[in-house]
Image (cartoon, rainbow, N blue to C red; front, side, top):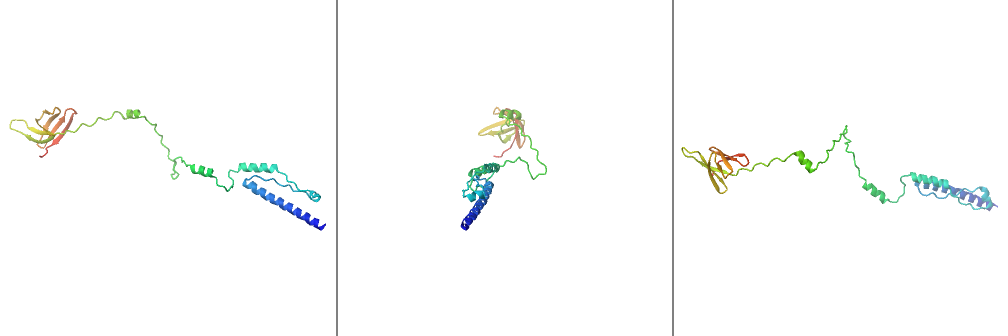
Length: 202
């Protein structure tokens, strides 16, 4: 009978240790969010004396609590690498509201004017200014004067040479307004533009 008592003590110790191990596994499983294994219910001593084999019984209440904890936990401590989470974090871009955090007072954004069409922009700017008149290309290279006759000047344009006195029009466009010893004032009658042409040597 002493051998039977030792076997019974060993069996009780094994059942108690198994129960503690299962409780520890259950705590780790609930904390990590892993599915909860079934728990063996402790067997009373009366059933041990009768030699009955302990049976495993599931605890649905514990599984329901573990499911709630898994749903509530946003991140698990699963060591596997989640490429979808990495991709989502790479695509995240920071868009500020334009406020300078280093200034004591926030800057008030100015209202943006609505975009104008090219026709509206032209109407707002008004008509374009008239182009400037073309320059007078005549060259003054000499003059001639005789006693009792008006002073005359020699003007050239390209290979053409014109001789005129004050008030005369040359090339059907240029009027000699005033002749002075070092320059002559010419008026472009088409564009109403006056220009002083200096005396050129040679």
